[in-house]
Image (cartoon, rainbow, N blue to C red; front, side):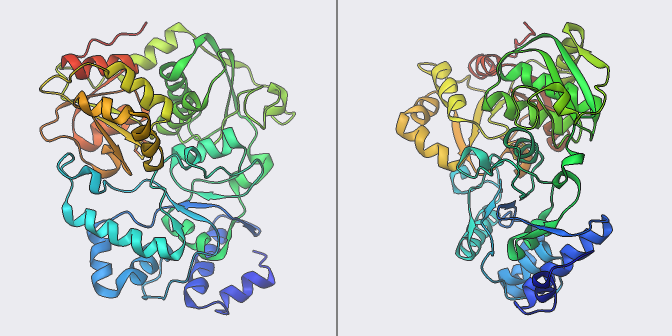
Length: 426
Ligand code: F3S
């Protein structure tokens, strides 16, 4: 692999042992992938503050320097960690102080996370604490090389923003933060970003439920390849594409897709395939739509709903407002809880607009930083949950051993108020 003089200097320790360890990791990672070189990144989205029993032990042994060295640099020593070299943000983490008394999440891990925030914040990590950094001001531009983790964020960055990132991990992002470099392979190369499959929607696709189901279909079809979607698509917005990408990255491993005329690298269907022959279209019609809906509801049996989870990926302000409007003047069923996950920066606006108060007056909770899947935590005794997120319906039953219902925001709020699931595909 070709290294620049600057790369070699970092590798040789000219910027200290932590930067040398970071460069060593990137070189090993790049060589394993046959990357020819590293590329510059000035935007890293990783995970440093997430607490765990292992991290608690490392902190006891050698402080936060040791925790970063082992977890984010793959190095067993306790290296002194310098300030982040390039802008870096913390993605979603675990439940924070606002979950106390609501989510059954260990107090000692909340405290560990607060300590982590202090340490990493001083080092230059922006504690955005959301899986949707693009909703709270971290918006790379088209063509920009970045190093992001979190599958739903990666697919949004590549597809909607036209930035370039692979689905990185805790160690590669930790190393990119200290060096401003990442192996140049995969999605960093234009030729690896063109479409591989064509899907034609032959049924109207409008609103987050349908965009989520289409994404779930696309991911199941192409797995880790790159779908191009045409047909009866109503103009999507941020919310629609947030749900589409998250679902495609759950049923498959989609990291980039194209919507001709909508996403930046696909002005036309031909351009989405980079001038190669356009493959025959796979239809997505009413039959496929119903099949996806039944698949996502195949883990629901009992219609008594204990828990409603909204905001996966973390909710937009529109979703918070819509939830508040649906709950205004109502009261949750006595046996049902509702949590709405939002980025903390958006919660501030929701508070000012009065939406949080309306949701909480109804008995719901607006929580930040994490989600039930990430923190492995739901209201005690939950056996059945409902969600408007294909991603959460896909993962949470396996993580928590509970039943799942999937439907619209209206279906979910109705379940929260009545305690019963009555959703159906319309
Ligand atoms: Fe975000 Fe949790 Fe969903 S991290 S994408 S709300 S599974």
